[in-house]
Amino acid sequence: MITRNFPGNYKSLAPISDFIVALSEEAGFSPNDVYAIQTAVDEACANIIDHAYRGEDIGDIEISVKTVKNGLQIVLQDNGEPFDPDEVPEPDTSSPLEIRKERGLGVFFMRKLMDDVKFQFSSQRGNTLTLIKYKGS
Image (cartoon, rainbow, N blue to C red; front, side, top):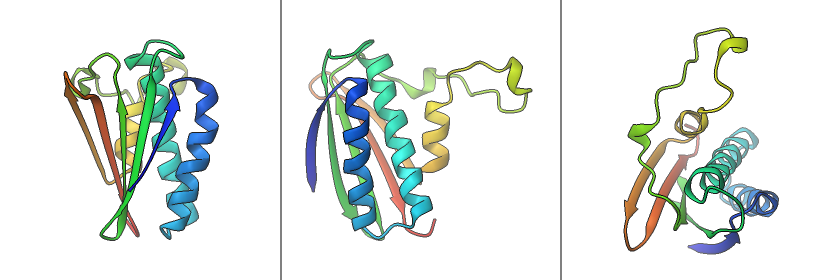
């Protein structure tokens, strides 16, 4: 397992992306899957900054990556506000684009792009988001 800490700010998104892309490629994922993993992690990190910390430079994002049988597991940890995915309404994906809300698709995209998405919260560890992608899925 490889673990890195990044400041919870938008400037960290590029180095986080580089970190995730390198490990995804090293794990043997196709370019399309690397892009899916990168996009899901980018969305998760932006959500941590926007919603858990409610702003930049309030806390860190710890990212741990390890290979699992035929896949990659990415765990994101933050100490921000508790997050309950059940409180996020299902996005409207059927209305014309011009009348849809601009935001609110992050969890939806993560679930579409990854094979497994788990959210947990504890008062000691804060928010933990586990993302898993399997090869060829």
